[in-house]
Amino acid sequence: MRILIIVGLIFLKMGGVFSQVTNEGVIKKEEQKVIIKQENSDVIEYLEFREVDIKDVLRQLAKQYDLNIVFSESVKGPVTVQLHNITIEEALDVIVTANGYVYTKKGNIYKVTTPEEAEKEVVQTKVFKLSNADASKLKETLKKVLSSQGSIEADTRSNSLIVTDIPSVLAKIEGMISKLDEPTLQVLIEAKFIETSLGTTEKLGIDWSMTASVSGSARPTTLPFEPKGEKKWMKNIFPLAKPPAKDEEGEEEEGEFPSGYSYSFPYISASNFTFGTLDFTQYQAVLNFLKTKTKSRLISSPRVVTMDNKQAEIYIGKTRPIPQFEYNDETGNYQITGFEEKIEGVILTATPQISKVKDGYYIKLKLKPKVTNYVDKVTFGALGFDYPVMSERYADTEVVIKSGQTIVIGGLIETKKTKSIHKIPLLGDIPLLGFFFTHRSIEPNEKSELLIFVTARVIEEKKGGKLLAYKSEITISPPRPFKLKFKKVKLR
Image (cartoon, rainbow, N blue to C red; front, side):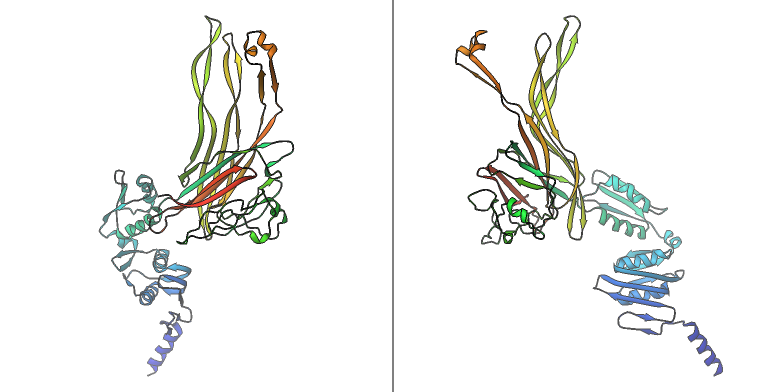
């Protein structure tokens, strides 16, 4: 009887077993503790182990989540971890690998063993067909995961990976492939090139000295401006449009900018700021229209779709042959040896880089717009060769915007000099004498500014396999300089 009492006291002193298992999955012991808080059937909100033997941990997880877990006798040792918001399989992977063990999954059975025991297992071969990633490139990434018995080959014809290894490594590679073989996102880039004339009494352009913090909703209305706080100056600048009505099917009809006023850029109350097609969060450029009627023209309005981290180029214009000259010693003159093609028009190169955060997608845009124009010619050589003079206006910038936002590039100002010739019919065409019946004049310099509006939007696959985007149309006609429309369009 004494012996039994002594043994019982020693057993209680050592704390060899768990004293209580509650319904919430809590096991309490003097120095050993397990706390499991479950958020739903797939995610564990909180998981804590303190100096608990790994076998007891595996048994508790198997019981709590109806898992089939087996382990060898060599699997032992205390576990101390603290995990938050993870899946059951992620928790199992952390617990097993953190203690130097590996596990294999066959069907619904998890087998936990030592690495030495796992190497004795029979290797298996599995083919992974990739849908988006490049097999040759992914092969180099996955090589580091293979065991000493493993091998990996890439079949470029079918874009597949052939992996041979033990089951535990195959399971890990399968999980990595599922994350790395995700479809590459695409970006819809829309640019609008507007050239405006800048006279001495009018100003149409970007006032970079002023900043505004404006944001919008996610409704497809017309213009993406909604002020944060009281911005009185905005009432004088933005002729805000009214949200479009809905048709019978619930789709938004097109809306116009400015809304139906008989004059341009009217005063408007803050209650009409109800817009949000482009979701502006920050907009550090202010369109400052100080004159109602302006000389503006839309040069081009291209749209292009490109993949993440792939450069897109928009080119609208023509090529002009530029003569190449070489001096001829025999004739003592220059002669044309060939022509070089020079692009004349508008070029916009854009490279998007997509990042996903909790509140949506952000796009890092590398932009380089360039406008090249023919302005004059120079004549040289005894034969009177004409060599064209080209002007270039370009900007190089890198910005981060939220998907659907618009950025403005301004300040590309060009000065033009206009020459005019007036002559009396017939008399002005007489050789030599025609000079006296001809009047030549040079008009004052005229300045023009190129405004570039660039909207970038991440394209996502919607239900039913339809890719939705927005198409905008802009027209310029006095007395209302700008008229902007947005419509939903299906890209396929």
